[in-house]
Structures are given as C-alpha cells and as structure tokens.
Length: 123
Image 1 (tube, helix red, strand yellow):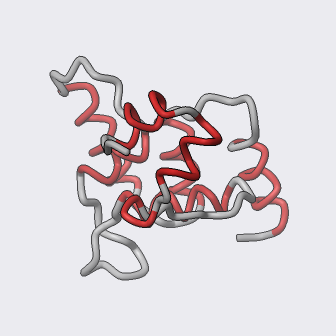
Image 2 (cartoon, one colour; image 1 turned 180 degrees about the vertical axis):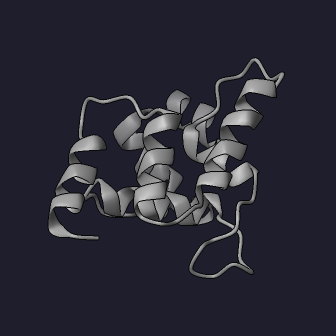
C-alpha cells in the first residue's frame, strides 16, 4: 500500500465515525485482502440474511470464512480482521485475556455491577 493509500485508509477509519460494511469491504479490496467476488458474496449474504441483529462488519466478514488472498488455504478470522483494522486506523491492537483479569483491581476502577455484567464473572 502506498503512503497516500495509507493516509486515505486511516482517514476512513478515524475517530467519531461509525464503521459500516461497505467501508470495510472497500478497504479490504484496496488492500487486496479479499477479491471482488468475495465482496459480492458478503453483500449478497447481507441481502438474504434473515437476522434482525445488527452484526459488526468484521463479524459479518469473518463469519463467511473468506479465504485470505495472501494465504488462500487460510480463512479470514475475526481476530485477524481486528488486527488489520487496528493497523488501518493507526491504533494499537491489544488483546484482553479475560482469564487474566484481576477483578479486584477492575472493580475499583469501573464498579462491581458493570464488571459483573460485562465479564460474566462474579467477584
């Protein structure tokens, strides 16, 4: 990817902007992560989907297990797409290891009720 393409991708995924499926597909195409046929498959799947829950665009792409262009024997995963998006947005990728969370410290910062609801663990 050239420097102007990097700047354009970073602007596309900047702050205060809701991430939509079409933006993700266009960026994946520009980065040659997927083919145009793959992008059409995602769009077709969204048109025929009966789900009423709005899924995150990366979840939609990952659920179809599209092949990686650089490694065709491997499918795109949610984690891999998340890392790609972080790189595009010029943000660090941090993986939270749920089993390593110190609940005592977390609840001092965010509150016990919030921590219980979103980590599904009891202190």
